[in-house]
Image (tube, rainbow, N blue to C red; front, side):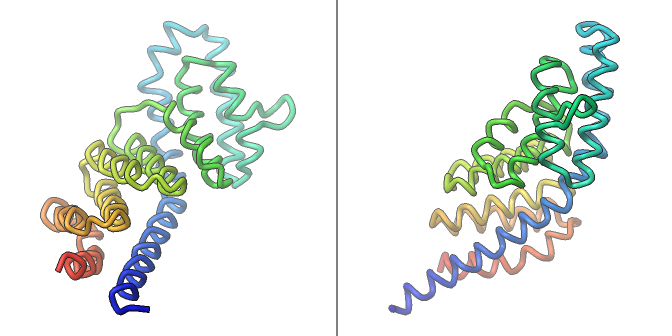
Length: 229
């Protein structure tokens, strides 16, 4: 094996390890973000829809159905949360159909996407996540980041890079944007573009210098710099 081939192999391994660490962060934090802020979307963004376009009884049923499904989701019972179980628990997929157009249905796409991603059903997860719509600075970019993860798992690295960059732009805050930029950088490294990756890593140091990632990204900067040279 040539020295150059060995270096490329080591670089790819380092990038893979970094991407896995990023996915572990997502697993630990996205559910918390969604639970904490999803309710605000349901109440705030969906209030007008509920009151004016959905009858009050239907709105109450949708809220009750979401409560049960979310409870299963929090308990780690993803399959039950997604598919439902008996009359008491409709599940996210049924909520999407039964209350189509409501805030509950919209939010259920995000939950369903996470469940499907955890189950390794990346294309189905991608399809569900693309149905979710929000404009906040936390849930929306977190879901967009997960869309990038779906693309990455499907081997569509170029699309993954674009999704991560979009997520960073949507968030534009210290809490979400830096991790998205790091993921985008990892994707560009896999695409053989360490120069672009380096630009993204360095932007974290300059634009989000108070974020924890501004310190941890140093290893990525060193790796990408070496690859550019």
